Length: 581
Image (cartoon, rainbow, N blue to C red; front, side):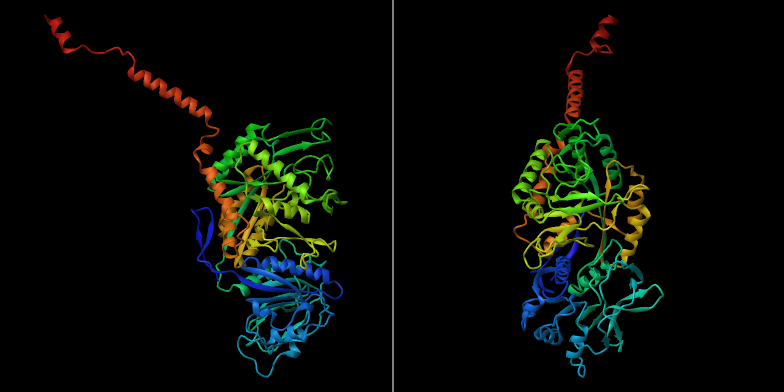
């Protein structure tokens, strides 16, 4: 099913010798109270499946006998406890020897239906463990592979209480622990069945027990797949107002440290209310600031990959919530709460495919006018877009490097039909249910003390250190261009000391694009075009006009010196002889 990861000229990884992708059926609750949230959780699970396989979504109530047979594995997200499970589903789960992951709810149904008297290897006979319907205990962390992963106290999801009665038949994969030290199994494996006591999607944070689930899922679906620990670095929020000298400082650091990296760029700067221009609105582009565009090309020559970060990184003439580019949302309406943190409100008024296609075309025209290579990766400003914005950007860019919003109703193919949504991040590259390749951002970003929009170096490194227990973990993070490189160096050094290898975004995308191919996404074609552009003589000679003129002047002087009149410093033999005469 899977090929091997090999180095890509020192700056990335590629997957080779892959066969046809496998398929995983993901069932979601489609009846009962809170089913819409369960369906959203199933979308999150299906996205994680996209690291190793194609995911197909189906409502639990729609399941009929042998539906799982068309797939290599089954995942049941059963977060709605009340509805009765189809008998065919229980029978197929018990009888099948293929991989099943069951998340929350219904363990007693499985228990009572299992052939306890005759358990066999690789069957779903549930002998060896007992399950109660629910536990009301307050578990605040999950223990996994010697590490502690916190569980957000706001998560009110109920959890099944599991008791292992025969340790020879059951592997306890992870435990949950209360503040008083009491533990219970959180995830177990019995034969080919993996059971998880709760849905870890609710309130999933950067260090959350969600990461434990992502690793358990990955190992269950692809037990022989290669792992590793890799780092992805992104320099953030570069627009026409950026200081080109600071960009060169960044580029020089990357080049000296031999770091593959990326940089997010928006092509047009707007400050409609004149917040930074004495109350006078202003707007200019990268074409208007050629020294910034040149510094961006220097970043490419230093090993960077340019990523499109919206067109203006703000919303027209509106305060969303501030006004100027680089600070505001562009593809979603937002405001501030009482603590000064961003709050997502709703899609913009004119939220149409036509609008966002025009935005993308305008942005790409700005890149072309500034003589920048056409990008193939996109990052939404502040990681927020409407469903139509995601769809429009997917038509232009096959890869995104970010955390992503997913909407209630997507499991049923109904789009944003429930008015609910949630952000998801990934510990490894995936191809999500929309067909997009998503690169992982797992550590957040560095921010100086006192800022509420970032993390300290110590916090970021602590997350990376904890994640070392995951079979495949990416330390993806971003760092703003205007900050000093001192903290960046601490992050880079710390990650390398832990064993993380920095790779290019293209290398990371290739690992999933090969395993779960999408012929129409254009990734390989667009990435190859980008590489060809930046490797061309035209690109490398660009911005070298002064050096070329200086070289020509020097060559001209050398030529003139060699072929012009020269004064001899010695006499010829004949002249010497005549003097003797």
